[in-house]
Amino acid sequence: IISPEIEIAKSLQRKLEAPGALDNVPFADNKIRLLEILINEKCPLINIKLNALTKKFPKLDANIMGVVREEKFIMLKKTDEVIQGDKAYVVINASQMKETLLAFGHNEKISNKILIIGGGNIGFNLAKNLEDSFDSARVKIIEKNKERAEYIASELNNTIVIHGDALDEEVLMEANLDEVQTVLALTNDDEDNLMVSVLVEKFTKDKSDVNEKRTMALINKPNYALLQSSLKIDDFIDPRMNTVSSILKHVHKGTVENAYSILNGEYEVIEAEIIESSELINKELKNSNLPDEIRIAAALRGKDVIIPRSDFIFKKEDKIVLLAKKDFLHVVENMFRISSI
Image (cartoon, helix red, strand yellow):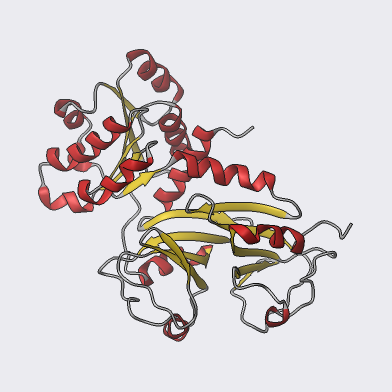
């Protein structure tokens, strides 16, 4: 059974683990990660061709698969460049997350002081996850409903629960808003989530700290995404996309073990294992006859993460992470089918 609230809470925790990334998705026993990274004005990679980046960062195991540019996904070729405003999808060696983000001009620190607005299932599960995995995190929740506030306070060990309305300046001050590094607005009301995120800037007394705060808002109505930049909210969380990605891993055929949806399913990043019956086994990448709409991003062989070059040979039990366009998913499933019958 897939619980959307639990999946969203897990996704939010991963985002907190990778400050500077819009998303952070684990593949291949957590050895490989997919990062979604905003290319801002500080990015030193702008106007550099992708094939030159390999020479610039020879020790970095990273593969820029494509970008969302003007609401369209573009698979990048070796001679292409990233430009300001792109959202880049980068498959990396999970052990090099900090170095990769730094290469893209992001050196944000992991937040230790976190304020969650809304103690519903998402906020509650996120706080519980943070208690289990972030030893240094100081988490507070503001919950409007008194009974719910009392319940989650009794279930959580190290989280401070404040009963009150987060739209009230006094309640935000009680939560020591000036000290908070990340605010997550996770109520069931889109408008409240937007308002709280805006009020964070208004009520922060030390204006020099405003740009250091990260705001994230749960938004169910897609049209509100148009307001993100004008309201200066760092990240909108679309609960549908988290749920879609969770479902995809269960519906694909063959040895597909994980899947992540990009642009409402137009593209997918997929993890699958090479088995005896795979048509790729013992083939070189350059001789695999893959269509342009399928791109091999990385492989896990034993404990080693490999960014494949043209002479890479697919071996049994390799865990392959790849990008595929929606219309070519049946090709991927056939490549990794259990048998030829």
